[in-house]
Image (cartoon, rainbow over all chains, first blue to last red; front, side, top):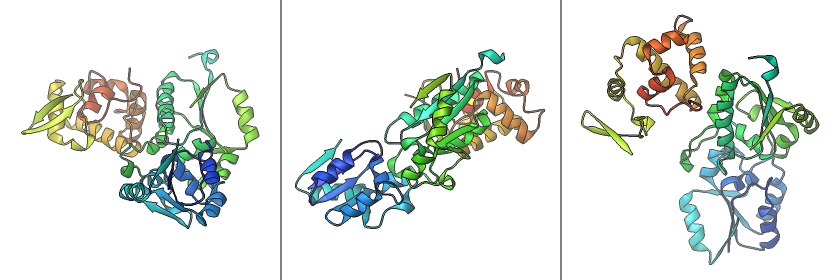
Length: 98
Length: 123
Length: 111
């Protein structure tokens, strides 16, 4: 299944809840959630840990808007809006962690 | 304007840009406030520090990139920009990652500075 | 939404006549807007308009009058960096009127 998160991990516990619940599948980080996928932030460890059992994606336009294109954690894949659609189609269902 | 009528205003920025409208709204209010000759300062803490990250490119999200406007603040005589050290560290940001000159304060120093203010505006 | 027509091309404006799409601006459009404001564009007018466009390009806002005056003084000299000079060129307000000709949005905090 696909999990979508749009909140910064520093100001909302959506990422932690999601990581706690999700056992497999894809996580897509969009909007302020892309901060989780950047090197040196306090949640880097949690993301690296999750990369083992889940596939983690981050939306590139949101990363670029925030000036973080050069800081994406290794193991996190960036996708465009077309990739967002592909993920939605490829997965049987989807949970948005609003 | 007489000395007594000048108040210390602090704008407290705690939200990341683009995800919500707070950062942009704060900036607009700051620019308007500049016309009233008050003692204005801006504090950036928590996700607010992300507002000042260099290299923002918003073409892909079709949203206005307002980060260059922080550089205009100096021309508006708003020169007191404070960033909380702990917030920067938690986000892997260094002073050189920021697009304007700022004063970096510890959480404790930030707290003391807040106590000195007459008015705090929270965004 | 209103619009103006210059050289056979249509440009969207807001209800006060400010150009909606900054990128569509050109000198002919500027001349047209100036006419509607009863301004006769001289070299001095263009100087201010060009300055405003550069300022916007750098900071993504139209400056407040006070800021514009100060910045013009710095760049073009004190004889031009005063409100009397700027109001002579743009009687209805340098920021408001010159911004309109320059194709910029109305300055933030302009009341």
